[in-house]
Length: 270
Image 1 (cartoon, helix red, strand yellow):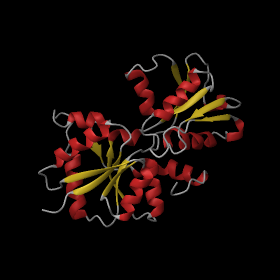
Image 2 (cartoon, rainbow, N blue to C red):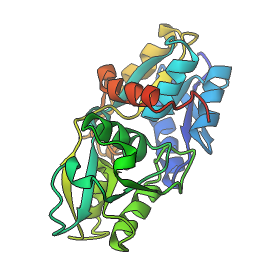
Image 3 (cartoon, rainbow, N blue to C red):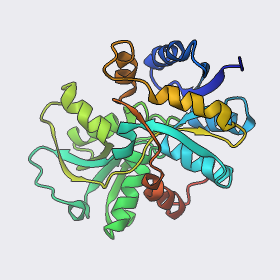
Image 4 (cartoon, rainbow, N blue to C red):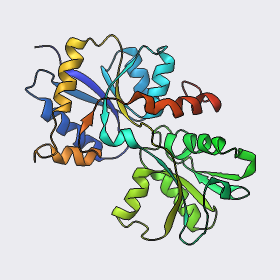
């Protein structure tokens, strides 16, 4: 039997260990056994993938874009969550603010998440530019509170929401997962309303280099896609990772982020 595949993931929350121990147990005894290595940030994880010290990286959309840039497009996406295919950015304000549409942000203060967060900083600026709203047309309040983790912790988005509640900002840009968590966990019940939502785009994916052959990658992907929401042994892992099923990559969903990174001059590495 071949050596287990080594999967890289970023430790953005304590339950990441529980998730990946569960994933390792799920793959145990299959034709595609795996182990995992945790990183403190996505820069180091991408470096490890490029260096060959891990076989597959569980990447954010920005980490994917940067891997594409550093491999001249030679890398490939293996799979993603169903929720990664329909990600959105939400522009929110305090309930009763009467803001409507992006045009309402002219002359106002917009709180953004960490500058390396696609959903809460990079893409919000891209969507504003599509609406012909320049950065000088409003005041940006930046919350760079979890740099390196590409917004995965959600901390910078919660900081942006608090800035709105504290009247240091008039609105905030956050990811759909944070928006849904506000209601689901009743963190700030009824405090906010969404006044604009973006088109859908793709978020995370499992990224590999051409050095990982199909003879090793295909069995692993097949086993991954076989995880079943209706199986009580599988569901806890799927729930913690925020999906109901693993799916094939939707690569056209990264077009907006590729364009945003180019327009904003974001380098392949920070």
